[in-house]
Length: 104
Image 1 (cartoon, rainbow, N blue to C red):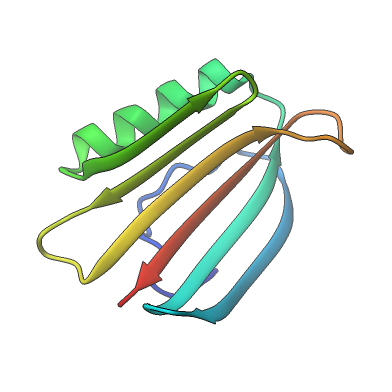
Image 2: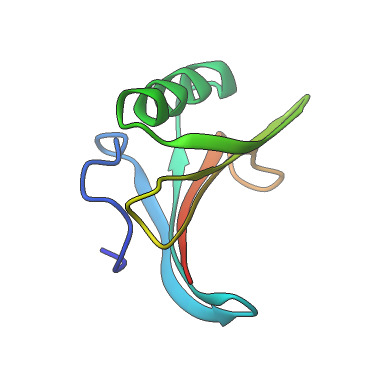
């Protein structure tokens, strides 16, 4: 489980984990987990919107395209930002969900 990703993030039960990784970025370090979801884009968006709202995250960016949705959110008690990206896989059958925390 990648460091700094909130422990209460909802993960899809039985989903295939595609990657866990961390790497340096300009503003700090990015910690990420990516998995293959069998849920639709709309179902995943609803799950993660609810999580962000229920846990007092402030969405600073909401990118909405046909087969892609990305939320960037912050909380005043955490130094960094949470990025949730949901996209239709071009190779695999399903949606990919990537949850990252960029620690500053």
